[in-house]
Length: 136
Image 1 (tube, rainbow, N blue to C red):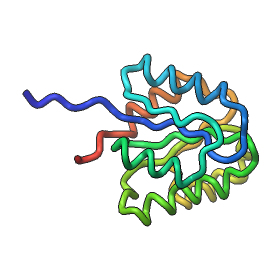
Image 2 (image 1 turned 90 degrees about the vertical axis):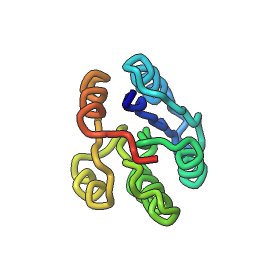
Image 3 (image 1 turned 180 degrees about the vertical axis):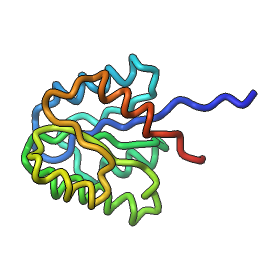
C-alpha cells in the first residue's frame, strides 16, 4: 500500500499579538479539511515555533500576525528554519499585512499571504494545491 500521509501543518502565533481568533478558525478549518494541525497558542517566539515545527515534522508553518511585526517575525522564522537545515518547511500565513509589504515578504521566502477577506476555502484550496508532504 503506497498511501500518501496527511499534511501536517503548524499554525503559529508569534510575538506579543494576543488576537488568536483567526488562528483558531484557520486551525479548525485545516483540521476539518483533513490536515493534521499543531497549534502553538499565543505569545510564541520564532525560536519556539521553529523548534515545534521541527519536532513535529510539519510540512508547513502558517503564521498569523496582526501586530504589525510581520516583516521581522516571518523573516526570523524563515531564517531559523534555514539555519536548522529545515528550509524545506514552507512558510505562509496571514493577518493585517499592508499590500506594499507582500512583495518583500515573498522575497524573504514566504510562499503565500492571506489578508482580510480571504476565506477559509481559499486558504484550504491553496494549501491543497501548493503544500506537499516533505520527504521523511
